[in-house]
Image (tube, rainbow, N blue to C red):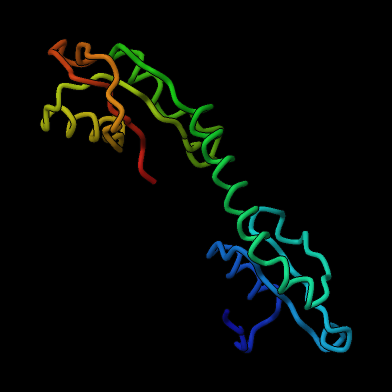
Length: 168
């Protein structure tokens, strides 16, 4: 636990802790101390979604709360991964998938988020060219082997699919 005694406005402190991803943020003021309570905010909920809880209840339930936060964030991450992963079998489909969407007017280029499972021969020079073209690299080689196939870029044999994605 860390007590933030910096001489800053409360809102500034809150956003700094939200950005750091702390799982539970407590706010305790003079009235809370009188009531023997805390204001608790959870990482898996909106930053302003906080509730007053008695100190005894908070202490008794924090382990369960932390587990619920971990389980919920993990489930959400797995669902995101599943929704944004595609198996791709051709160079053109790969380049289309990772092409940056056009920006509207003076707006910044939208971020493309997704993962491609694609057969790859392992050619380092080819991976560098793809990185230069699309800012995409091999992010991991899954432990669970997929079916062997042909590299989508060279047609050479490939032992399995690898995961490609952009790094931000």
